[in-house]
Length: 474
Image (cartoon, rainbow, N blue to C red):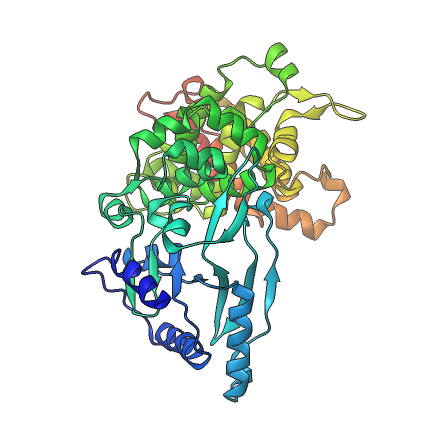
């Protein structure tokens, strides 16, 4: 009777006319999992949860498979899978179980069992219900499919694929419609969802930009509240914030991500600077100036960007998309920090550049990002000055460009050419590490109004001249 009741509840939320096309490998996997259920006479329903379902419906590649079980812990079911495979003489097709303990500070609220089966890396978890208190750490119990769906971050991430009967379930009642309407919405009232776990505020922005969806109006208004900003600052680890920020900057529309962070008042929370700096050296408009730099970069037309990158680029609305993702991430991270590049903050024994402080302390980012962004900003300034120089000074372009390329290739090590073997100097001269160099060429076009740029955001003649010089040396 209990099983029948669960099936009746599942039937009530089945999405009609949605057929998820499984690959042969996926079909074999789900058949195997159901054979485990039947063999051990388990009264449970298996569901694929989260992004796999969303991406399958959208016709996108889907790889990460999370199996949610409604009556037991994930580790218990994974152990049954291993026992079944061994009994069938298929030990070579299943790996060993790994257990990832719950770690709410890393947004891992539940113990997860990981297991490689038939070539798939599977996460097994139980359906969960969560209750929050004054921290982001919830108390957990095994829940129903409805409870599990409602506690998720977004409706489009709360869809289930019922493995037992091969159907799609929408327990929130709006996940499918929001996918069709391209809306980012929360299952519960957004203030509750965001204050329960403020990291979801950043996830909402990241998914909106990843899929080019609109934020639900109530959600967007909620993201702009002081309650969400305060919760984000006090409840979420900086490492997790940095991970989400990188996800935005590596995504298809990093500038929109920064725009949304800015319009919702979160830009200064993420890129936080010491109060002493804000009061004494940095006016409140620095965030708006940072946004202006990013928007200027985003407005580069395809012809100007081709000169910088020495590539024949097709005419596209956003030619910057053709930068490799990691270079684009550095460009926009540097753009966000451009107004801070000349400032320093008190350190242990000596002052520390404010850019380094923000990356290392406010974001807990790696030292490599400090080096790349610092060198990029330094070289972009040299390129900007070169582009703004009178035409009769352009004979110095080669020496200046080579010096900038040296700094980039050495990654901020501070070594001069005399400290490096001759063959290494030759390699630098041919620009063997063009990643930051190309990015620096792009960022160097900021402050365009000071270097002859047109108001429409395209490069002015002097900037094009500087870009051409850079291109010839690549």
